[in-house]
Image 1 (spheres, rainbow, N blue to C red):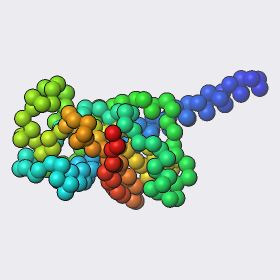
Image 2 (image 1 turned 180 degrees about the vertical axis):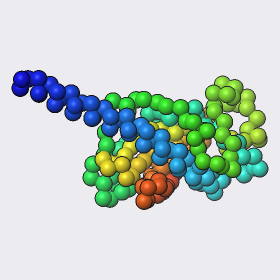
Image 3 (image 1 turned 60 degrees about the vertical axis):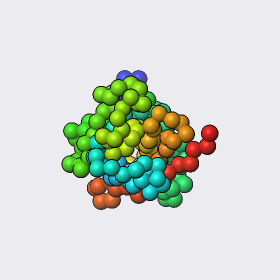
Image 4 (image 1 turned 45 degrees about the horizontal axis):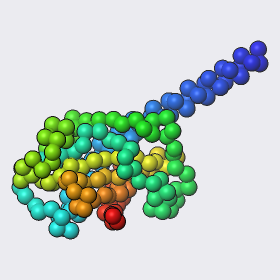
Length: 191
């Protein structure tokens, strides 16, 4: 009887753990949806201010179809930015799970988003005059604190050249029940 009780207890513990991990992906999608347009605005402003791009009238933004783990910022950076954070949520089951960004679930925006998979494979064959950003934005998965009150993700702007690619760290926090951007940092790349 004790063995059966022990097995039941362990099974329930594992089931609860899996539910929390599934919830983490749901939370991640919710956070990305709520800050997505603000992230685009911030990156557009930083690239324009640094004269990396020239402003045009188009409002088309090309985005990589899926959030991925490649280029994911080191979780230690969340400790440095948010001083009160003392533990990061580590997702070991779904950390490699990529998911498609669903433009239909985003709030209304003055941009029109286009999946990069719908464009020609060679970036130099695209007429970038038709787009706000002459390149593709790629979003990484997020790091959260253990209480899911702060988050961090990476966004890469790439236009086919490693020399002109830019990486950004996006820090977000939960205020009341809404997620807002705390800071957008342009990361210096050293090649």
